[in-house]
Image (cartoon, rainbow, N blue to C red; front, top):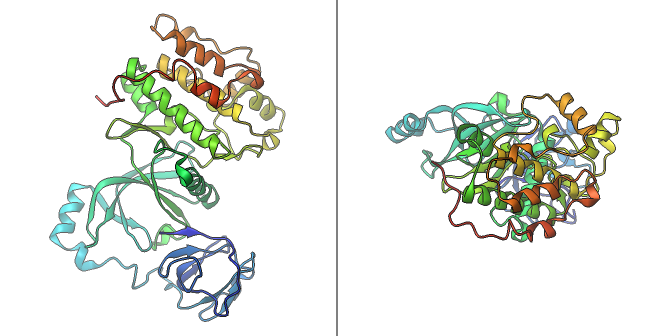
Length: 398
């Protein structure tokens, strides 16, 4: 498993060693480690930036900005290959591999350092537009790609994707997420040995069948037990994020996926930041009026994040699920921001005649209070009569 590292107490006489290493554009070094006091031999790691990247050479000692010393062994070959990472041509030529390639629509490209993930078909852009999302298949012990499909997110934005990985780890610690987010299997600070992948990173995730946005587009508004299950799942995701001390800032239908077994899970945590911190980016349709005001006044980067930000976004999500359409559909970012700034109250007209549960309507109304101080906390929201109901059946695909 790949790990992102800072410093460790450098009190060993012999520093840890890095083999098959490469200096990244950030000044960090990725390589296979041995002799580290807390990391298993053979793990691929990424150091924090080294003090003098030009000093990186075979057998050299380098020091990171945080004070950790490493001894560099054999570098990765200039063409980006290594004996360890080369895909075995005999395996790729085998009948088993060729059968898998045909069945899984592989394009014969792979990401990964010690573990290979073969890409399938063509990518789709992430909701932020900063990454490409691929379907991929993990190579088994014989090097043959095997089901189930996985999701691989590839990006040049190493800072954002490494932050997302850390956020997944943070939610997983102590079981905070309660399996409401997709599983995050591996972070690859260098996506692969292929030339185009060496300056990109990748995140390997559990794959959903489709997101809630596409589900609404094809099926229309949710009703009954499906609506209740989706609302409860979203609330549990937000609760987990807040218990981890984070503000998600990007709650929208595109960031919830329906799994093959019918569960609804959250995805995309690259914008989640600590409560009291500042946002790194924003989705106009998910931001509350107070942020829109700050944005219009040129103060967005100084905006102080609070949990109430997500409560507003959750209310907007619920309204879209119950009505089948987003309040700001077909409007661009500038239009949405200006509308939010001048908004007195979000109209709930789209719920008229829909048979919407009065308790859900009340919950949406509470979440969409213009004054953030009047929005409920997550603990109060989770005790709301609508969310304490028991869904008679799980969310399902049909």
